[in-house]
Length: 163
Image 1: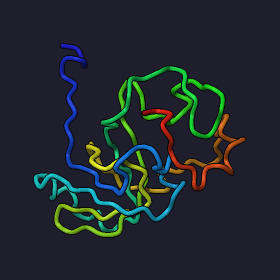
Image 2 (image 1 turned 90 degrees about the vertical axis):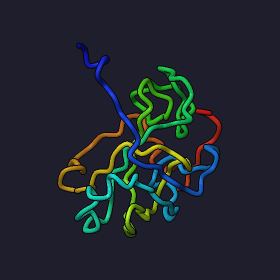
Image 3 (image 1 turned 180 degrees about the horizontal axis):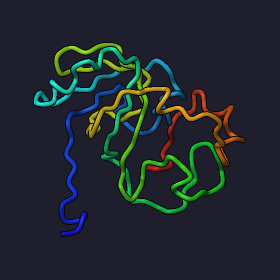
Image 4 (image 1 turned 60 degrees about the horizontal axis):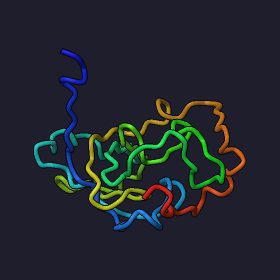
């Protein structure tokens, strides 16, 4: 049996946000601070939330359920030049999986109140991980072609590039 024969992923909940359409959404959580939403976790996973309220931020892993077919060269939101797909965060990928770091505001039974999200309403949630700066924030980094566009990130919203 190969990994392709046994590989299976299923949603553990749904992410709700004010973004009903892709156009006009923030392109990353840091580009439009303050957007609030909810994660509605399937009730069977509620025991897994134990001790999560002590964390200020979460990493949400989700499925880009409205992504179009992947292209290996894409023109990202912050540039007019095409780049290799894996050098971007374009949602149309061979395995359309997204990640976002969001602020956790509170937990009420199976509902997580979150803030600073960049996720389309109705997005299937695959996993939740606590954000831990000592684990998740490397020291010195390079950001390739994005270095020239760094000042354009705050307030940048999506358009129909990947629709």
